[in-house]
Length: 138
Image: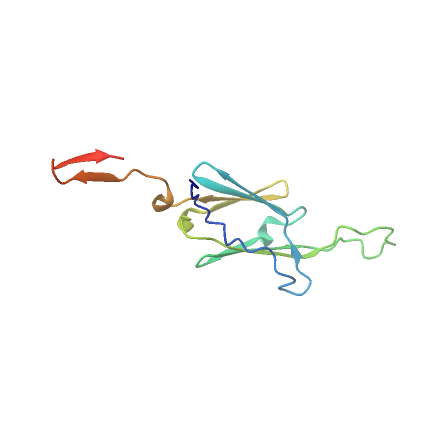
């Protein structure tokens, strides 16, 4: 017997190419912790004021901006830490409490807490016995 599990991120969209010219993908970790999902996105050196999180229906979009280094007059030897735009989109499945999503930015990591809605949580269903007029718990 195969048990079906509820996965509201089954339709999780990975970054699909460059959606905005020059935008860099945001690396993320996503875990389920009890009745919520935790998404951690690495955004080092990003000004928290530049982070924009939008939810349009079930489409969650994360955007951020990192400014270029202020060493315009210097002779660069190595420049691997590029500035620019960061972008990531996810399609949230059914069963997410979209009204209660919260976000926090700390030490270069953007953390989103994405709770599972009450209707998607496991629950017991009462079965009525029509002969005895009593309820049985399954």
